[in-house]
Length: 499
Ligand code: SF4
Image 1 (cartoon, rainbow, N blue to C red):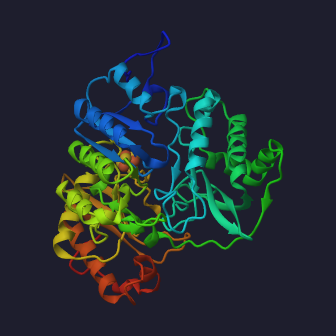
Image 2: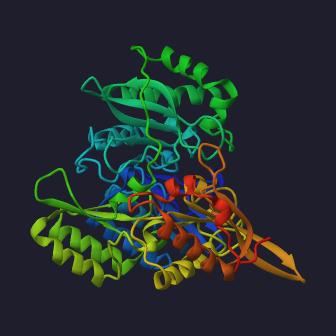
Image 3: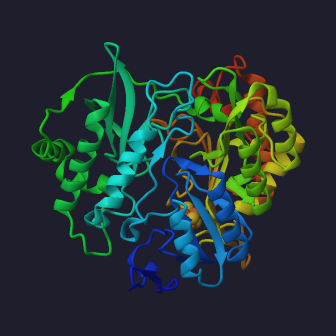
């Protein structure tokens, strides 16, 4: 199915853009979904100005469902669009720096970085200039439209809020080597859905862009840029071998890629959600607020309210996170209580104990034909149930996916819920396959429940969380650490029928 968005007039040229070119939506590549047309707006590094927030709120209100969704790449999605967006509106968005000014590369994956870049008290380097440099390069080089739309890049500055374990094709993760900041190069190798693996190569900050350019050029040299289906970088690396690929990258560089063995921490889960709450910045007397967005959703009134708060108290920007939450930054200490009160008045909060802080869902049945269940609806029901039955004091991430394609990036979550439906007495019964910390370095140490009906799911999750809460060694033991040492056979669920 080909959906055209309105003709866009640029320099007197009529440009027709269509979702028929790609499976990945962009601002200029609207894509049909179950609930209408979906438009995704790339937000490099996830940083939005208050002006941009207002423009997006207007679009969501006028053309979409009156809300926006923050994605797990810190993009924004406007859903339920049922009429074309005027060309002038799209041009206005471009003028505000939204969407790519070069429409041919607009569908390429958003560039990810830590949402606390430049304000994180422990970061080794502010990665925002690297995000801008790669974004500018993409924009200026139309031949990169031949890249897979899923060609994904991430810069991690080595701070408290790490993004290096997010799913990306290419990861530059800052490390300190003999008092100098370098970036470790990670590549997506091996099985689908695994974080990028360390190649052992370290590069200086100045070398990141040339290395990225060479990585993209080698990719383009191996594929047919005009074909509709393009291999993922991971598939190409698996096909030709990543060492071979890197040799070809090396041939395009005027410096040598050097290697260094560095010990890497893999336990990031608890730290990832450290952004929720109120935290001091590296700048004296300034704080950032990590605001919980239920399943990444913001009503237009909430976006407008947050934009106003950012202008009134902060530096006029909000930052989206890959955990589908949001940061308000640069808040003076003296304004903390006022900002907290105003956030609550918008129907939002900054509590780590809020189950929504680490609850993620793909769009589910209402937005995606592949889904077996109404993931978003079931996730909200679960959140409401847990809110009334158990108080958490640290985040446990729970991911709902409607099928095993993992749009909600469930592979690393503490509890994964995979939508399935079965036929029983001529009726379709919806439920979930439940994985509790099952997938960690491909070793199974958790527990699987083959099928739990939607109705019985909340009680099962409550029991699992209760066991963790009452049997953990101390408050610092994460859910994953607990699951690793706990005898899972005791994690029985007598009251729940599972098949
Ligand atoms: S995980 Fe499956 S059901 Fe969910 S949005 Fe992705 S493709 Fe659709």
